[in-house]
Length: 384
Image 1 (tube, rainbow, N blue to C red):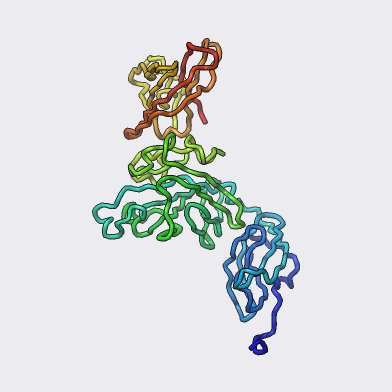
Image 2 (tube, one colour):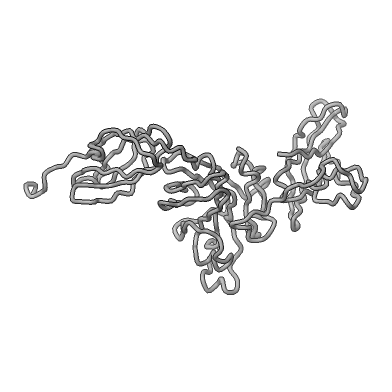
């Protein structure tokens, strides 16, 4: 039987005769040779299994994403038992200075626990998980090629070839295309579906997005317990990334908020922006227009007692205040001082959080500054 097998063919890259070469592109097709014992081809640096087209009995072709500059690529061939049967290396230099997904592609919305289907939605699916979605946005000023970018944790999905995003454009990955479009319509741009095998965990998990070379763009772990937004866990609201253009830690609850509306806002943004003179006080209540914007009140109607303070046993203090949910351009910080001379961020624990429309009410427990039984509290609003 062995004598009837075709002659062995060495695994090798044959493009440009196997010699290094230069292209003015962010993608390249590599041709090569291999014998019948080659089951799959992997990148040595990431371990990723590459989509391989067998163009002949002993010839193959793969497509690779390139970064600007020299790309040293080592390919490894494996047989059906997982044993390496060949390897080859080539350096491809890209002279195209294109924007990179790792710099401009960001996850901006995550709808991990939708409400159950109702009405016409039931004709498409009875599974509430089918209405999940993940929104991504190109934050750059140029068209961005995200071909080959992939979710590798949380869900599994690879963006198809020739997937580009214009400056500021969004794209969605959903669990079930028909279910999503029944609930949200067909105006949004969809890259595809990661279901039915995958779904986002309702109790939180790690989500990882990588570029076409396998390098991590984003990796974070969300949760459904305080201080994470409670309304995103089954009440129908989505998780919104706060100020995604900033390098915030995605594994911190403070980097996320709930959407203003039930169902989220796929393909759009519900973020508010302060406009006007931040130091104005049109209603003469002692609160600046900027602070009233942050708190969700009006500078044309006097407001007082914006902080509710309740002393607790043991010397701690419960502080309750309301803020504008979608004011992603500001941060609110509770600060304490033993003497009014110098304030510092408070040692605080979130006790309760409730959402009413576009307003968020939170109660925090504050611990006195070290060595002080009496202390002063202030709420500071700052621009991001």
